[in-house]
Image 1 (cartoon, rainbow, N blue to C red):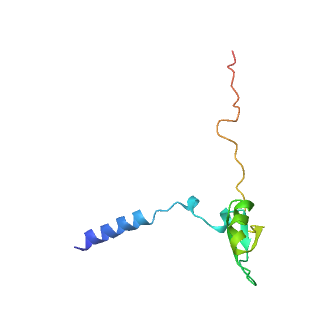
Image 2 (cartoon, one colour):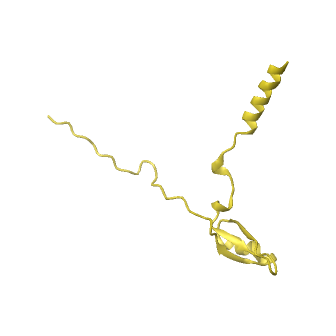
Image 3 (cartoon, rainbow, N blue to C red):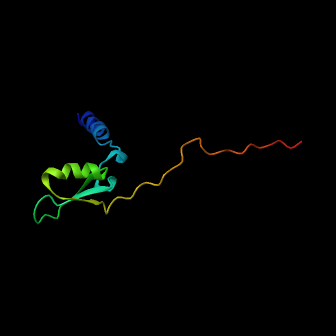
Length: 92
């Protein structure tokens, strides 16, 4: 009786616990933040991909848009296949 219950629990944990960390959203993923949404508010909300997006959002509720102190862009990687490979010549 215990074995099937434990097996089902392990399967459920494996299926539900599988997440992709690269798709997780965090303040570290976005370059722009809104600072304050009202008088005397120092709240920092860093979920904007552009300054325009931040300004549009804060236009109705107030606040300022600032660059995120947490954002560190990933280094640009060259596209695959763009590197020129050397051809080796056979020596005769």
